[in-house]
Amino acid sequence: MAVSKEKKIKLFAAVSVFAIVIIALGGCSMSNYGKLKSNPEVTRAFEAYQTLPDHKYYYRGTYSAPFVVVGIKENYELNSELWVKIDPQSKDFRTLVERVSLQGSGGTTNPWGFNILDQSGNYVGVWYSASRAAVVEIDEKGRITNLSPMTMVTKGNQPR
Image 1 (cartoon, rainbow, N blue to C red):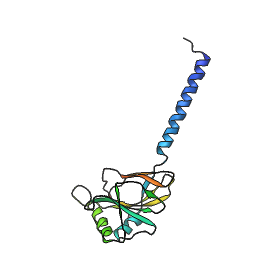
Image 2: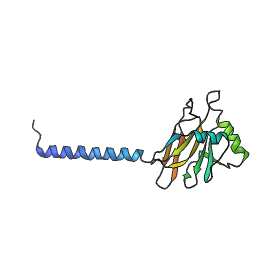
Image 3: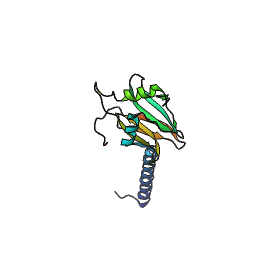
Image 4: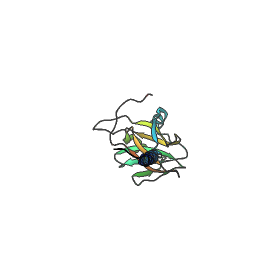
């Protein structure tokens, strides 16, 4: 059975369009994702209850059992109802940082400090938690639309 030249051209065009759409969708789905980058200086700063100027601080979890504290640069907006804003000059801030280290299954897991980076590698803020991975999604207007710790707590040592 012979396939006409016209059908071959149409098939090639259809496959080409399909490939372009798949590549474009794949690029869009990853375009707004940032990441966490380990930073021992951030770890030390949180352990000393030091805060950064021009940052707004939040925690996630309950006050009695928070599992992450973040500081977000003021030019970014954390767009989530799951985060609770905290005054970094309050005694509650110190309490929350202390409680973050009481994570894991019945024991103490040393939390780590991370820089939060956008999809282009630009600095967004700091992260302090035993959770070593997070979904970081930031839109083109500087709104952090998703900042979610991964569900598993990872144990390990961070270089000091």
